[in-house]
Length: 452
Image (cartoon, rainbow, N blue to C red; front, side, top):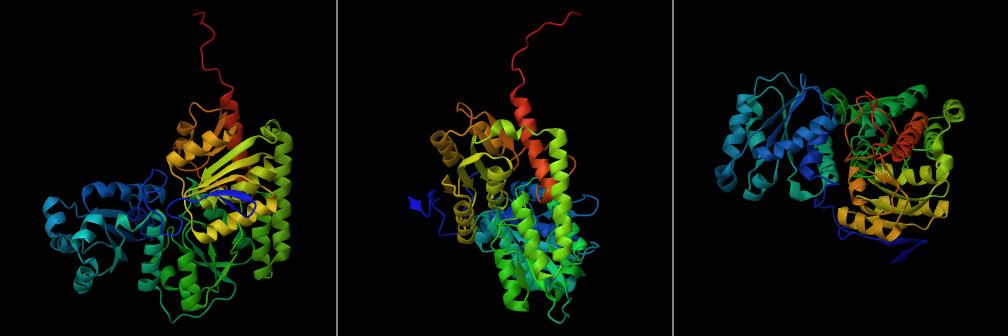
């Protein structure tokens, strides 16, 4: 159907919470684990069968936890506990670890225990006097939605359970929200870039929800003047709660995250206006643009060979929406397909504004899955796809020349985190395109025989 000035295909979950039916998104249990593991000096107890612990392990890797510092536990429920309930084994497991040197133990419930009615909240309330650390139960069964729903559930619990009311506001301060709700496989680098520019502008970061965040910072979140949401996929509910409960103003709301020249300049300018730091922003922008231009003149990126090439973007909203302008302005390609994993209304409105601003009329798919992606690629037939390893397989047999893997699911070949945000992020994305273009010219056949 037509909406605005572009074609739109809405997934079945557009008016409800996202469901977990496809490899693009894991379940709510995974998202809650990803959030809880971002709290330092804590441990996580999965009240689940052993199979669900795989999701915890995945979250552990995504948060880049140190196994020497962070512990994950599991009640490893079997048939009897799934059928008759596992509250007793949960209580026994908590008692067994009561001497752990941690600040908090997050207790997460999976599908089975919630279906049979295990009350993890009551168990934690009963056992709280017996342990020295905080027990924080999070009811986050996988059937509650996608990983993004799980992130929102965990953030809601953390804010309501741990934040203190009796703190004074810190002038010129900010709380960072949901940097981990991001399909950039090295998203901690994006978070590092944000903290660096905030520091240059004299803005104090009170806490990050959540990545290597001590309980003490979470307790003092109410002292922040503003919040900065670093995701278009999750965390908006937390930002809204912080405003309603503590008067914490959300800034940079309703604009794309800082990927690409225009998006970065606009995002930084909004920060500079709010914190009276426009002079510093102009310095950061001038330095960054000069660095990008100088590097491009010397390195000769291959963008000139892809002018007006039909392109598809398949990603989460956090990366996908700002990529639209990057692909159009920096790469000078023509986006013919934008397929996003989720379909929340604020994200859709933001994408619509971006497309109208750029005068683009691509096919838009919300809540995409592998089948929809394959069908859309077949309909649009782009030459370049920005996506993941999934799109490389989904493009087989089509006329797609290059698949630029920039988001998960992605082969883990990076040992060092590389941001997409900011000016170095522009060069990192250029490099992804350059490497894919170069690999596309490699011979797929052996054309010579060795002489020795």
